[in-house]
Image 1 (cartoon, rainbow, N blue to C red):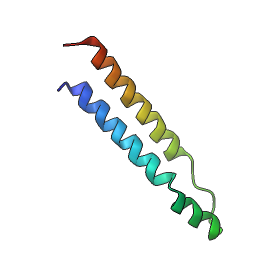
Image 2 (cartoon, rainbow, N blue to C red):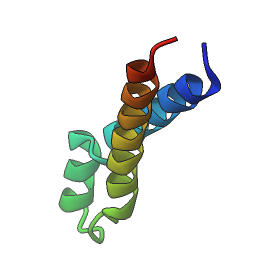
Image 3 (cartoon, rainbow, N blue to C red):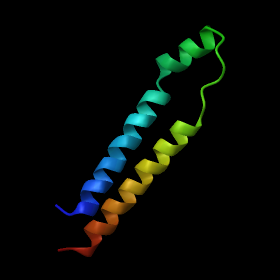
Image 4 (tube, rainbow, N blue to C red):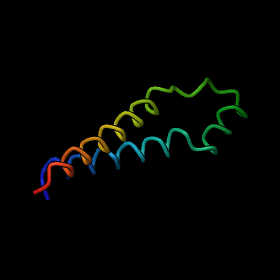
Length: 66
């Protein structure tokens, strides 16, 4: 497995974990019920960017062939 493929998989995993943690319905429900300030959208945005970059990296490495 190439280094770029491993890096792409790691980026996708980090993006998915970031999105699942910061956008979980339970977390958002507690923030609104307790009157806490809004959740910072930056980690969710960065998680989405990491996921897209990881997917693009995997597609770019896979399209070259071996």
